[in-house]
Length: 251
Ligand SMILES: NC(=O)c1ccc[n+]([C@@H]2O[C@H](COP(=O)([O-])OP(=O)(O)OC[C@H]3O[C@@H](n4cnc5c(N)ncnc54)[C@H](OP(=O)(O)O)[C@@H]3O)[C@@H](O)[C@H]2O)c1
Image (cartoon, rainbow, N blue to C red; front, top):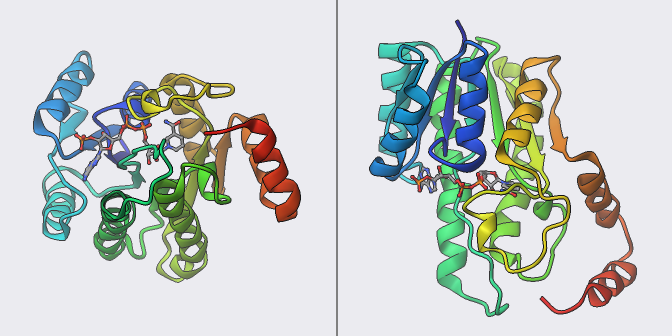
């Protein structure tokens, strides 16, 4: 039986992915920072899957805690074949005010937290042909209104994953990045705008499961049309890009 560790497994995409992997007979360890929320999620997942699901509280911003968690999984449960790094903070900046605290929070969780996980995982996974997958976002493809702090961390994750895709080949660790369009979760319910082609967390779990378990590929993205449009917007000249945003209206 293969083993997946999911950071941010207590809700949204991470929770749905945990369920999908359990249904496909993987051993699943979910982590998040809020103990009560994590236990509630784990007890729902435990129904019919008692011996395949574990939960370990782990605040990814704390390197020591990440190190303890990964060691516990590796030594007491099983070597990690696949790590899905999905834990993230999100706070849409509706007013477009520059708030340093918000930038610092998102850097700490989304970027520093992801780096902590990779730093610990690489030592265990080295030489084993295991797999690290980072959930980034198409918001990181290019600067967008109201998305400064979140988008910046997602752009950095994307860039990081691309670099590690090359660098970790010598460690025999596979690296992937996942770029979902709008998925209905606690985070996106904070958005005040209409999200085009909003999909369910279960839909994202299907795509992530098949993307990560079939033939190895670097980028997994869905729904195709939404992410493809953002990919096109990435290469437009700034004049056309800003014209489109002006037409879309005030955020
Ligand atoms: N939903 C979308 O439309 C969408 C689109 C593109 C990309 N994404 C990405 O997909 C991932 C999951 O997002 P989601 O929408 O499913 O969000 P979500 O439901 O809000 O889940 C976020 C998860 O991260 C955990 N978390 C937050 N801070 C943490 C910390 N310091 N340490 C450990 N865990 C922490 C949360 O649990 P605790 O509160 O218990 O810590 C929760 O389990 C994120 O990386 C997000 O950027 C989402």
